[in-house]
Image 1 (tube, helix red, strand yellow):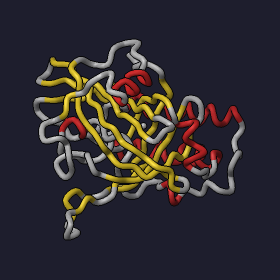
Image 2: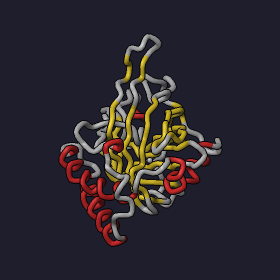
Image 3: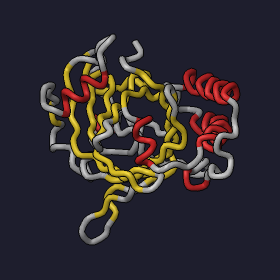
Image 4: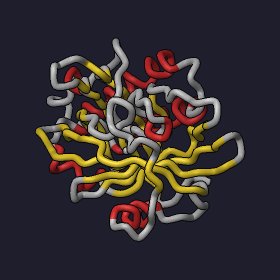
Length: 260
């Protein structure tokens, strides 16, 4: 399932799930052990509706991220407490499939020749240890492309440890009604090709090789909430080339096709 300050433009738009914001609720700090199952079904539905009512009108705004995060944090706390802290290996059966990002407090840097569509950012997660981030972009204002970023992951306690392994793009935007799981599977298995970005996208000039962790603090059949962290990327001497960040919030809705 807007994440990480990568230098490669295509990766910048699609590094979903790994960044940071100080002063907000962290997965490690959530008190979610003792309250598992604390909400009724009606209370869960009402809390999710509140989250969507805050997130969706702000999906494209970058000028009010701290304010929106402050509104969302107490609601996230409620759902996380209700959900309880579970092993990542157990959560993957609920996380697998296609998701649409509806809000994050990670702003994506833009290039003058390329703009991403914040309303069209998706993630497809496989239960075999990989995921693809997919999203619509415009080059020089009118050439539609689809950005693609692959990551691999392994469960580690309540979190997953992940690493970005491949990035590229396709000409043409995601199509209305397009099966997102099929698209990601076809890219993974080589039936659909993506064009590599210039330079190959390796860190520190791109996302490939960047590592981090992600905790899903709530997930059900139609909503997922993650807290993500990116680790420092260093050279052999230990010099930090790409600074790590922590505690970004990601709110996602379950989908099967793009929301167009």
